[in-house]
Image: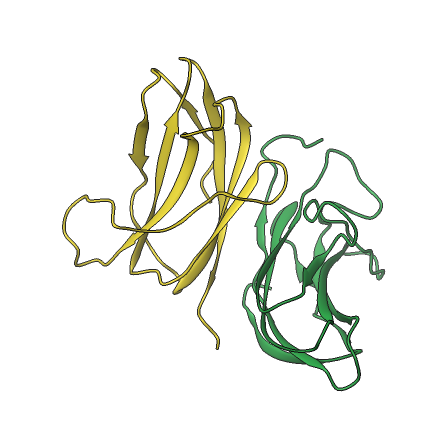
Length: 119
Length: 134
């Protein structure tokens, strides 16, 4: 689980950052995002978390293959993405675009539900 | 409760409970998957129950999500479903946050004789609130 992370916009351009790669625990996973506080307006960009995957043998810091965006709203600040066909490594892409300096988000990623295809 | 309960066939009218297991946090993500649905209109209802170590009761719980009744995880079709149990600052009846022990309750709803489902339960994703809750 990612502990609370605070992002504060220092400008109004689109910002994109990636977490470190970490090993998958199964072929599929449901990832959950909890936004504790979010003052970045929703819209064209807002605040977005996307899941990427690649194999260990893949060289370079290219993003990898996108397999889902944590934008399925559950309730309150909870969002999830059901990602299938994961390769060996997984990471998150964090994108946000504020409309004013000082806007930001406090979020965390809850423990994933890892599962293999059963049928 | 740290491992999956693999695919299990449930016949219409059946209700079963898992063993009690220690909680891993005040809150949890409950996820389960319906693998087979051999029912025209029935569904599977999955919920968590919680109790303290010194009691023998079976207190039911209310989910934070779904937000409306029935406050539990309803699997109406093949696929994965999610429910969220989120503790609040104070105790509730039914409970919203976990006491020391947790177990699953699985039951059928609205099916007909001879119908069945196959489901599996994923380990709950326990977590704690990062604020005191509302």
